[in-house]
Every structure is written in C-alpha cells, then in structure tokens.
Image (tube, rainbow, N blue to C red; front, side, top):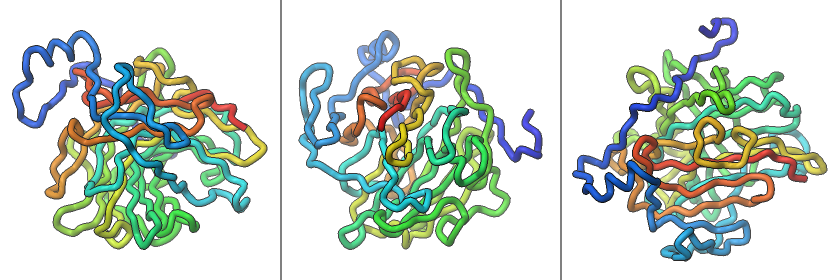
Length: 330
C-alpha cells in the first residue's frame, strides 16, 4: 500500500491469463498454433538505422522502403541550450492519417540517474504543421532536475514547434487534466518492476476524440478506463501525423547517457526487459484495433547503448516489442 504522502498509485502486477483479440475475426488453427509455440512476426514491419538505411528482417526480406525521417526531439530540460543529447529506441509509423495508440508500458526505476539526465517511455504523436512537427506525448519518466528526486512520474509534454521550447505537465497551457483524474501529470507511480522477479505496468492511450477533435489520454489498467485529460485539437491539427512508441533518454554533452528501460538490452523476457505490450491503434471513430496492417519501422540511433527488438504478435502479449539498454553513451 502506497501512502498518500507519496501521492503514488500502485501499478498492477502483470497477469498471465491475458489473451489476444483479433478484432472479432476467427483465428485460423495454423495461426493459433503459431501463437502458442513461437512468436509470429508481421511482414509489414521493417527497421531503419540512424542513417535511414533499410535493415533486413530475420528472413532477409523487405516490404517497406521508408525514406529517412529526422525525428525532432523535445526541448531542453535545462538551460544548457544545444548541450542536450537525446537517444531513442522506437517503433513508429510513416506520415499518414493516424488517430492514436494504446499500449501497456512496463515501469522501471533508475536509482542512479544523475540530476541532469532523463529516462522514460511514452506514446508520441507528431503532427505536421507548416513544415514543422508539433509533438504531444504521454508516458512515464525519471527527471531529477524537474522533480528534485528520482521517483517515477507520469508525465505529459507538448511543443507547438518541436524546435522551440515546449512544456512538461502543467507548467504552461497545453495539457488540460480531467476533474478528479486518478492520475495527474507529475504524479509519482509505484512500484517499479523488479529485475528477474516481477514486472509492473501502466496501460495508457493517447488518441483523437471523434466528437471534440481533442487528443484524449486514458488510463486502462484500472477496473474501468479512467479519463486523465486532453490536449486541445489546435496542438495537433488535421495534417499528416506520425505516431510512435518510444523509449528515450536525454543528458548533457560530455557526460554519459543513463540507462533506458530496465537498464539491459532487450530480450523476450518481460521480467528482465522493458516492453510495450498489447499495442493498439485507433481509427477515426475512436475504436481500437490491432496494428496488423499498419506499416511501422524501427528507429534506434545508438545500438551500442540502446536497442529495440522486433515488433511481433504473441498470444499472451498481443502486438509487442522490448527495448532498453545500459547506457554509457558519450
């Protein structure tokens, strides 16, 4: 039981009786057997490296030929200007008509993170606007320079122009929390996953509301979905969008990068590796579906320090991938 003084919410332990829903379709026996005995890898998912080069999958086949996209990153979290280095391990779509994502994100602490470092994971929506990309996102992170401790925090972030300074949580107008929300930006969440013993998670969604046009954030790992708040539609206008599930770190130049996720490179053990599980995409009507026909690409910019494995379909985890790394990048 987490005390009220810590303003934390206890996360659900990972259950093992979860199942995959295939949008109401019947699952062929052959595919079901595939789910039961080994992961199934979608063929429309490919990877690009930091230079935009297409990477082959395990079967040495390619379906997509994505053009290079230089992801803008968040504004500096210190006053050091351009002295911030960012790295990420993500799966993202190419620009198109997208309406949001939902995913189960494992929660990991980073007790040795330094004051000028940040480590976390989030759902991100990039919205093209006059040649630039606005960014809205929701997830969890550890950021001592903002909170003056190393607690794991739920956070929101937005920037009208990804090259200009944005805003965390409720520091400025942008994200509007719901009245009586069960989790508010900047609130601590606990407990963290325990390496090799138990994983803990939070399940979030960020999607376009079909009625208001605003981008709403929900928490889905409680008894009923809990509305947490929204980003006004003006922050993500009706233009081509990119949506991403991202593990990230930020730190100062001439320092070493902090750990990402569990602090270990990804494998397929959810008790040892950070993950995004039960990944869903939304349509224009606000309905959630498996992303089985959505072309996505992997982007990892420092594979010597961080990585992400394949996005694949597994019986108990749905569409899933693992990410993370020990850090140490300079």
